[in-house]
Length: 160
Image (cartoon, rainbow, N blue to C red; front, side, top):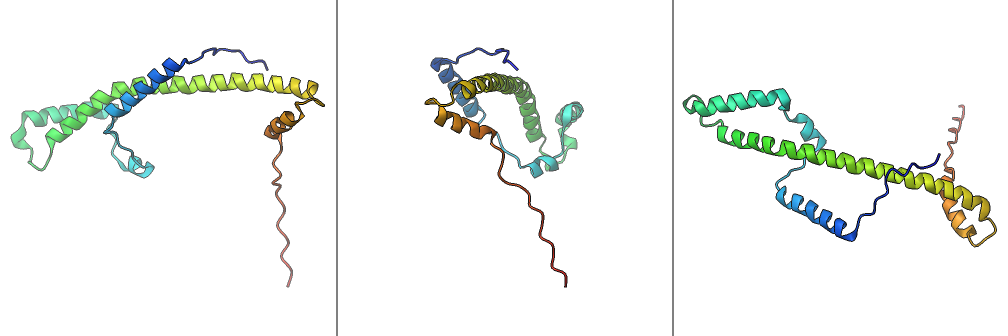
């Protein structure tokens, strides 16, 4: 299994600095983001794509007929929330594609490095025995050591 080398990129220090600054800018501009627990996320009613049309139509109708809506219903707050959804959705789409691309690139580059390392390790293991590589080879071989945890059958209960 030889690595294909689909990824052959070196991030310059300038690029890493600029990317870090771009992420810092994103974090600063999105400082209002919240975090939900899995339980909170599951408990919330979900708007979804079809729900967006419903919400848009209800809020438009409620805004056009304010005398019909009790003061306790915060239509203006809901309109602000809905606008936030509209504003953040395309940003999330782009960031999701970027995150998936970063993740796939890390997976591919890691796989290429690992496959090449396995090939090199095999050569070093065969040709480096008895040399100054012995200590390094021993350290590298730990990656393939079997776990010493073996299941032992439970002891039989004494019979009364």
